[in-house]
Image (cartoon, one colour):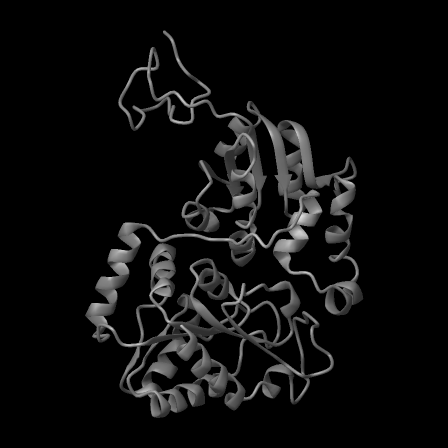
Length: 370
């Protein structure tokens, strides 16, 4: 039996999309160079790592790209152009990766488990992070040393570095940085479900839509802006832009917060059920005119879909975020930020100094700019 095992369309367990046998198939398309991206998390970093895909697609011989990621991040990578296969980080994927070989592995996490995978899978070239025989993580190539050092030197990361995450990634791989964007696109089913949800909520067709994503996880203290700040912002937006609608967005962990904002927000404030499928969340972000949020996944989803953003920063590094000209950063003026502290008793803290008036002015400007 003749098989094109290196064809981009070959599946093995079912017919390919052309429903042809391999023998004499006119659609045979060899994989060419094979690249494995190992990037598991966090979710926002997975989205931003998509900036590498345009550069890979521009290779003289575009590669076949496999991306190994965390199961929770799989819906994100599946919606990125230029990825041919997405594998979850689980036992089944790791078992057959050990039998494969790649031209290049891009190992982009700084944790032992993904670095171990990058060292075990056969490849001609490895770039990024690896795992030593002592079980410790280290940079595999000289160009990666600065990116790696940012995890060891708080002063360099917090105050001296002025490079964005995408630029740091490119330089860590030894590639020229030309401002490549990260992008993803909701599926047709995602978009249809989002439209149905907006209709069910009663969002008027054609109304300007401002998204508010008030959560920012629970790892770092004060990463999210104040609840009362969002409440005041909603009140002022409704007064100054009465034609606009406000869409509250977030996950299941933020359900209580979102519910409080919805109850106090009143008319023209809409709350889709929190914690739905990630594809639906992506498509709802795609429908926004402006998103107001902290340093969180929604920010990167908005940038990836060319939505305008007002991003509010407290304890994290705003310089690592590239908005690609799509919005404005509100950066705390407090002197001790960034800090990435998990607990902080300071009063006033960094987010207390981000004023409603500043966020409101930025949001109104972005509504006019869209």
